[in-house]
Amino acid sequence: MKIYGRGDTAVRALDGATLSIPAGQFTAVMGPSGSGKSTLMHALAGLDTIDGGQVLLGDTDLSRLGERQRTLLRRERVGFVFQSFNLVPTLTAAENIALPLTLAGRRPDQEWIDELVAILGLADRLRHRPTELSGGQQQRVAVARALAARPEIVFADEPTGNLDSRAGEALLSFLRRAARELGQTIVMVTHDPSAAAYADRVVFLADGRVVDELSAPAVPAILSRMASLDTSAPAYATKTATKTATKTAIDSALDSVMDEEK
Ligand SMILES: Nc1ncnc2c1ncn2[C@@H]1O[C@H](COP(=O)(O)OP(=O)(O)OP(=O)(O)O)[C@@H](O)[C@H]1O
Image (cartoon, rainbow, N blue to C red):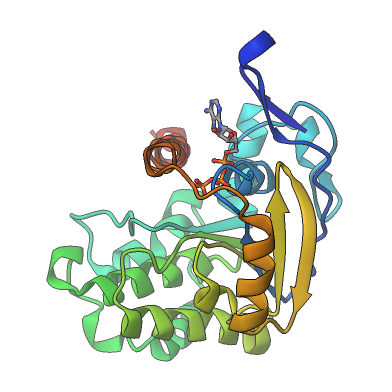
């Protein structure tokens, strides 16, 4: 359970949401605007606390961890890919990819990183800085960075939101391959049914709880489930405001990872 605010203005953003994320699978989370997708992702990733219930990553109960322990858990066990690529502009692609390991003081597993770079088609871009890369290339660098430390789970928040359709499809194919061939556990929040169709399973949220799911989802089935949930068309202003808040929360989490090292 997650409640924002108090009294009359309190919002139950998560209210009895129960789900399990199978290891090695690519899971998409969908739902109408305001249904709790970002809140759920933040809770699962240890970016935010919850007000009741449990979040388990393996045997670790995130709801019992303090701020510092959650920061460590994010750094050591979780990878993130955001809509805005969040690369460090002064670092090359290679340095950006190795950043989580550098921050954690771990030696990069070069063989693994070489494999990621090869699959993502980034080998000839490693010395470039983010401004010298296309949006699709920047996002592929961000994905390599998320997987570099072999995290137990990777969270992707609208990862194709800023990409054209071809770059988006290439990225989604990689995420699917990362789960199937590399055993990477991935959770992706998306509004886009064709993006969700790349996942092994789609979980649908409404009013802060899991209301439905689809295995081996196809676009028409996703669309019809979404239509049955989306009773009120989202007010665009609300959506924008929520997204801004989400980004801030994620950015501050990244900042705190950086601060830890100072
Ligand atoms: N920081 C906050 N303070 C108050 N209410 C919040 C806050 N963050 C989210 N909410 C509210 O909690 C509910 C769930 O929000 P959440 O952002 O998780 O939904 P979402 O499904 O990700 O929406 P969207 O698809 O529009 O991004 C919404 O009613 C939202 O207005």
